[in-house]
Amino acid sequence: MNAAIDGVSIRALSAAIPEDVMTLDDFATLFGEKEVQRIAKSTGIHQVRVANRLSTVDLCAAAAQALFNAADIDPASIDGLVLVTQTPDSLMPASSALLADRLGLGNALAAFDLNFGCSGYIYGLFQAAMLIKAGGCRRVLVCTGDVISKLLNPEDRHVRLVFGDAATCTLLEDGDQTLGFAFTTDGAGAQYLNTTLDYTPSATSRVQAAGLHMDGGQVMNFALEKVPSAINAFIRDQGIDPERVPFFLLHQANKFMLDYLAKKLGVASSKVPIEVADVGNTGPSSIPLMICKRHGREDLRQDNLIACGFGVGLSIGTARLSLRDAHIIAPVTVPAFPN
Image (cartoon, rainbow, N blue to C red; front, side, top):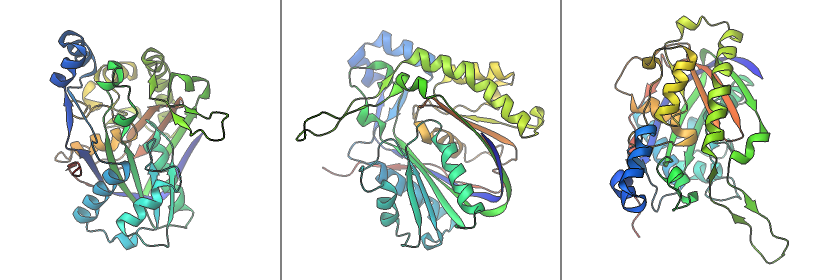
């Protein structure tokens, strides 16, 4: 699936991260110094953010408020809200409704959730661009947010040392840019990265959610085999000269994977930014969070940026973006609510 949508622009990006962290020293007391250092050397992750006494909506609201304040946006001007999350505050109603109320967006609003992980940011941008192109909305807020730490097995070092909590907001509005999108989905690989629900036959039993399961080897193989070809095909289909792509904004899974993908793409490592050391893999938030962490630099304010998210599904979402006019806002830190 490949599409180009014109008449839209990315106006601003913001992010929020929990104040609380788990460091390598913390993990060493649980899993041993040698094992923790081995994992950290490969992933490049030295601490992860943990949303203690914070929910997905809490983090998204903090990111959105930072965007409204820094970019001088009237919340009442937002007429579309897309919330990408795998950890909603509730199954019913959609967390986007809770977030809209928290932000005071008003009732003349299209708001919905998307249940997507690492490719979710691209899906969210696609939905927002379509809402604007269709003429139904003029300003759409795309929020990504997960408190994935609440789904992790505390004894599984392979996920505890990798995944962190975060949220982001990206404001799209009608404008003069053209965004490109492509998606692939392979449900046969769903078993390799999932959180399953157990619907028991008993009418009195409650649905139980399992912890996050990841077959790291299979997910790695999928990414290294499928992502470079997906990106190269997208660039070709969009009619972009590969030499004119200034940066590849890839899902921030871990340093090893990003370095390897740069080699497979045949591009300099400087064209593949990495920002995982102090936040970890933040799923659907990883690409916009990486952008916001580089807020003080002007190098991302360009056209023909190639973004690619990949993971849960298994799925790949690729996009052509322009940040030339975007207001890129530094991440805000959110303290836990008091007990």
